[in-house]
Image 1 (cartoon, helix red, strand yellow):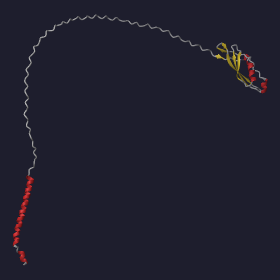
Image 2 (cartoon, one colour):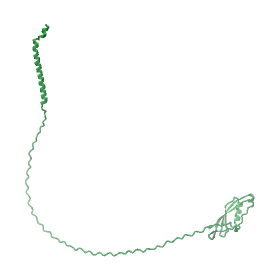
Image 3 (spheres, one colour):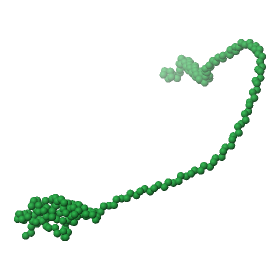
Image 4 (cartoon, one colour):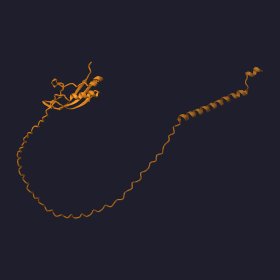
Length: 225
């Protein structure tokens, strides 16, 4: 039973095989048609171009300008002839003849005579006065005595120097005597004054002339043992 069923097909099965084949063929044809249509559309469809509409404006007819009437030319006025002007004759005056210029005379310039200026007087300088020679009291021929030593001053041991200022006249005699420097002991000062009043001096001289002049006279009082 089993072997028979496998070797012999049923009539239903034999009838269904051609239907399935035809169905497959129909489906395949539709697919091919769709593919062909799709490919044709993609290849043969022309590109779409946008066309702009251009409107042409017609030129309007030119407007004719109105014709102006030609003006009539004015009548020419007659030109009045003017009488000719009288010709005035110019009187040409004769040019003056220039007088000849006088020749310039040579001018002689006299140079001034130089005036000799007198020489300036030479100032004579005054002669220098001769130097003054002071009075002298130490000449040996005068024999002037030395002052006496007071006894009381010797006893008390008073010593010192007296400086006298003596005005000697032109005759060699003392005129004024003053103490310029004291010995600090009045007895010694008085002894000096008393002695010089008796002195004689060599008067001061200026050149060859004796004059009055002052002189300092120192006197020393010393005790010797």
